[in-house]
Image 1 (cartoon, rainbow, N blue to C red):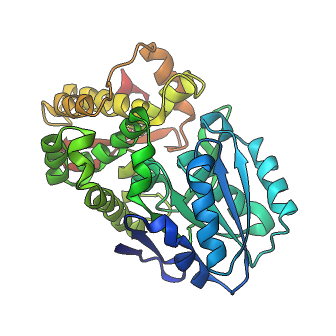
Image 2 (image 1 turned 90 degrees about the vertical axis):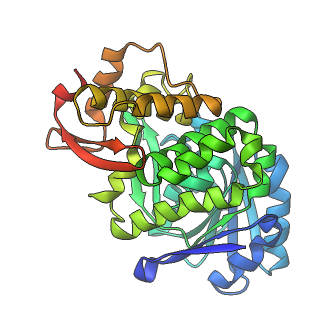
Length: 350
């Protein structure tokens, strides 16, 4: 078992990773509060048949009073109107401010459930148990919780740190290849912004099967990069913006398709290539970065190209939440492994 501590003072918490850890989730969750506290497990219709029973059994074996609720799987669930359904589940379960929410699922459940926990009764503790690669390496860590609005992705949200993150790499064995590829976009992102050696290691492994034996180390290396960034910039005003590499254009692409045709990881892959191509033309990024990223993404089943009209996607960037007084900070690479934040105006995308 590998443990990392996200050091945020009184909001500090552990990221715990180990194969088969889901069966011992109760041992991690129970010490976080009073014995016998109520725990509500929120999951989705894809995850529930696979992992809900094992999770609930472990929590109950640790002496916790457990109830659960299931939402439809998919990005469409991560919308503001889903919050009422979650609040209703919390109320029916009789949750109080001394109780705890467990989000068991991918980024949608983690973000939605975390935001519901942050806002119900002015804040409930919650624990993330991510079941997708994307959530394990990225969205479950760092305390950003949110829902999508019609005007853009993650526009209603909060900073609400979990009490713990429980990562069991064994659950990834049930992921379809397209879901694994989706998460690999975020893994590749970490190599791009902070770790040339990680980028090279992913290139050498070359496939999902090639990564399998090293998956714990890969997941925790990504978590460690994010841990360091979050400790330095919890509220996303400076260095934490590095974690948005590829996301500005990627989020706009998701919005263009109304969050239906393209997955988050696929959109980020397109966004990484697009931003690097622009920056290379402007002399802001070393030549060849876009090609290296494209080649690595392709190895893991990610296309870095999309047919959406460029002008229309760029038009959606105007509503990006990273806009500050008309200026948008984007993340560029000096070279692979060396990301930086660059302030732009509308002319950058031309």
